[in-house]
Image 1 (cartoon, rainbow, N blue to C red):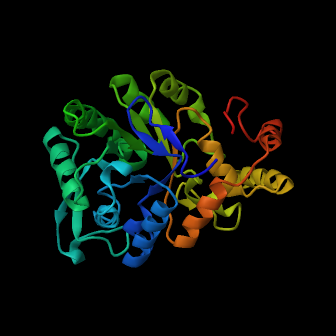
Image 2 (cartoon, helix red, strand yellow):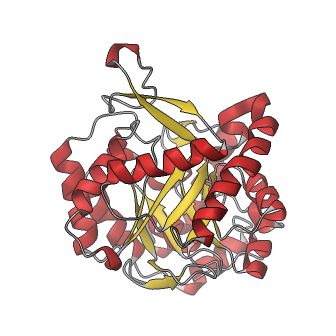
Length: 337
């Protein structure tokens, strides 16, 4: 398997590369990435054949979209697929008045959640202005999950299933975008969205990985049945499947609890026996599912990106996957390469 291999994007007429470039890190999440490094990563991704780029107004309060558009500006537009999101509206503001957490030295915009019809249309237009590109191909409703909104999630979800849905469905029907969906951290929120409306795709962060496969219960089979594409972000579970079960390893953006460390350590033992890098297994496992056309990975350095490119094409014997299942470290019904 190669990063530049293409896959059909669900029932749409889009084709995407099996590895895609996630732009949260170039929004300066947790720590700053210089402008020249951000551009170098996108150019390296492009030269490696990667043709799907995923951004959001939330990433760096607009900074990721600004950088993504700048780096892709002179590429042939029909040669790549671009995704962004709605749900947060940005307003110019003085830096000292903005809470940038968890972003560092982000763009000078504050955000407010806005899942209304009119707000969605404005957010969409603002994104195109920041990107300075003629279109985006995929648009996701962003962060309508409990992880983001806590006890207010049911109300936010209802607002989005009305306002955002009506706006994006109109844009899709007019051919302004080719695919619309939802991007969240919880697969059950994706499933509920799909049960309510005719979405084309989802961006699911961290909930279908080498460590956890609960979304195989009902959500992924439903997507497969309906021809819906699922992009997987957070495929390293925010760190631990890249670093291994080391001290301080991150799971769901916080230090991994003991039971997670123990299971990942057992997976690592199998990796060592078969001489398979843990991150290679994590990446290649995800895109073996027929509903998942691409693994979305963000990086902070060109070296990290080059590592991802190597891991994605690292040869893995079929016996490795069989051993993980035999040791009950992988679900029996999980598709494998």
